[in-house]
Length: 352
Image: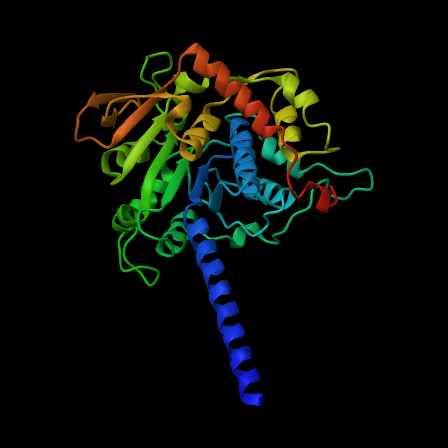
């Protein structure tokens, strides 16, 4: 009788183990289908970077992506501190942040909304927004962080969204083999990255010397010439057609007393103003695919010594650029407003 009970218990445990194993396997398969994203940003220059980052948290909330890291190519303490504020406020405090040293000079190019948000205080003198990190100077430089993250990912699984300068990406390509990976940076990218989606360049001559490219021309030249995987860029002429409305900033975020992205937007220029969504279009393409856009034939993009971008068609090329018509632009704007104004899933579980 005892042996019979033991047998039945063993059979039950085996069945339970099999069921649990099957469930875990399903979870692994689901996780493997989620886009693995790394954001490369000059956050603190133009406020569209803050909106683009906000989009990524909304995708995280709905399990569309896994945000592996946020790499910053604007120097200073405030860009990393602002990202830490955003990570913390949205409930994702452990997302790794990579920083830059000896980057290009861009501190006086625009009002630093990141600094403005970081310096905000409550009436009692406490910071308005919580942080999760203690010392931003101790963060790893972006190329090292890239190597650590990429080395741990499955082959051809990572999408990099670059909505700033190409400095960190160029430095990544130049990294040698080390104790993180026996592969060089270029080899590591070729093995682990499936797509680089950039905001950069111009192909209709409306703004031939686009900001993200001309701020570090040698780096942009290197990335467009040597990047080993598929590359899709959303150029100046796309984002300029899609303006995020100030009316949304004023009305659609009233569920929050204070919101770091909203405060960044309000501090960047005198309200009310509508802002082009350059960086958001790269995020949209990277996560949701080409359905919102027209995409060029394959080819090659070359950056001239003056910083202009030139496209040449080639059936064997791996580089593309996006375009939109007025109907697509309106559809995208409505999608941005709906997506960004959603209340975060972690909002009710935290203090503001």
